Image 1 (tube, rainbow, N blue to C red):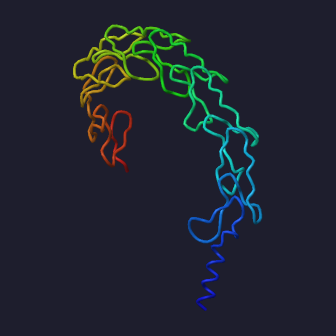
Image 2: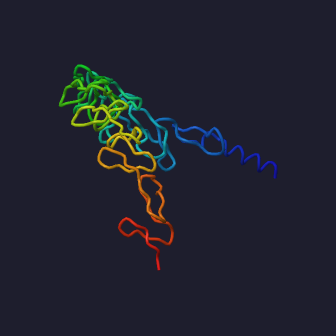
Amino acid sequence: MALLLFGANIAQSNPTDIPKNASAKSYGDGWECDLGYRIAGEICVAITMPENAYATNRRFGSGWECLHGFLQVERTSCVPVIVPEGGYLGPSGSRWFCHRGFQKIGNTCEKIKLPPHAYLTNSGVGAPWKCDRGFEEIGDICVAISVPDNAFLNNSGYGQPWSCHRGFFEENGACAKVFVPENAYFDEATYGNGWKCERGFSETGNKCIAIELPPNAHLDRSGNQWECNKNFYRSKSQCVLRN
């Protein structure tokens, strides 16, 4: 029995069992085709590779890939990747990209025309440049923003590029001074007249008038209007008991 097992081991490792252009597997039993060859039945046949290609030693696919800097065409050839002036070959080796300061136009990299008071952006959409702070894009140029007196440039990316200083409000493209009437306080809201009445007063024109509470009424949450107590309803300027 021992002799039979010994004979079987010799048969498995017999180099005559391995076809041409193949080698014994580095682990396990059997054999595999050498690099540049692939199995076809019980033999290893050479992989037909175009120029500027290398064998992948994979059992699937074409068995070859193009070298770095070459592009596969119709699975039959490898042609050089043509990198235009102002561009560079990408890490994949099959695509190219434009350097900073250049823009891809068709198969070329055109230098970006940067207007005065502008800087390059890294955005892949829209214009490749933006205007410096204090300037706004009008057409293909950057025009200085006209900031009125008592205003400052804001950081808003849309709408009005400037805001009025505290104590002023926008009116007809300018910043007008906020005049706070008696019994009112300055309000920083971006809308309205720039002030609000104190609690217990209501806005009437440009003044704050004291609220006269009718019987069975109280100031509402705003403090600038009144509402009837529970079980009363408003009728004209009075609070009437519900029946």
